[in-house]
Length: 326
Image (cartoon, rainbow, N blue to C red; front, side, top):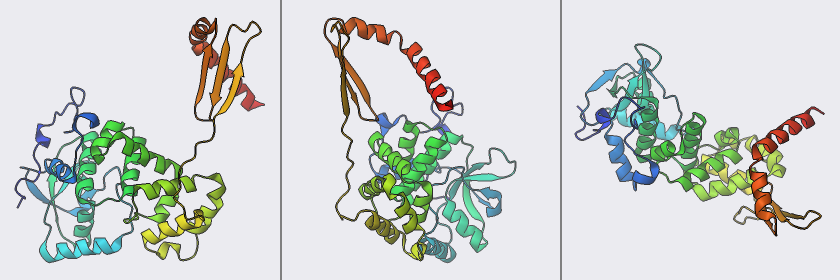
């Protein structure tokens, strides 16, 4: 039987994404979900009022974007035993497979699907015809509300969505996170290699700030060899995920002090032509380059440079390519 009030609204979504958004959220800035309860209600709308069917788990494939770090077998076994004891409480959401006739693709409910497969049971599911964008938003919303994803799992999900070409509004809607939070997630996954994150695992007891601190430590070129030594050491993978995180963090942070990002001092220079009609102040931090001008010809010379930026950049590229060949 379907749970009453489980998911409405998806049927009202427009089928033509070219005419209007194909997901319930209308932009991260305008309708950001404020709490997990709100997010759960939003996720419920994908199932509400729909017919629940029973499918052979072997007919159902995984989502095209992974949202969990595998490894917490104890938690999965608890779920499996609960399903064995009292059955499947809530349906999963699937869609007809976009490229294989007669098969389905999970939108959310991967662990319930796996449990049913292991137990030799049919899987209760709602089948919904939805596009890729709606798929990832529904998957992110349901898992953020109910699957207890850790910070790093959410960060990896955000990274995978961006790698697939989804914009930050879609990612923010899927994870109920603002732009600043998404930016921090991306920064962590840029500094820490994916293989290292997989070695560390989901780290359920570790929050955002500690991951940011670790990313700063791992991001130091001088720590590269030490990171590899720790995560590949004997017995490391047998430790609980939180302990793996702590071991690597402790090995890199010998001072035991909170790690903060230190921006390098900007390099400064000045330039002035022979007639002294322009004076330029130049700052270069390695990531940001700025130049300000003053004196008699500053405005006119600035406009002169601005009007020629395209040509100057093409010249830069040509000379840079030539230098690479030397």
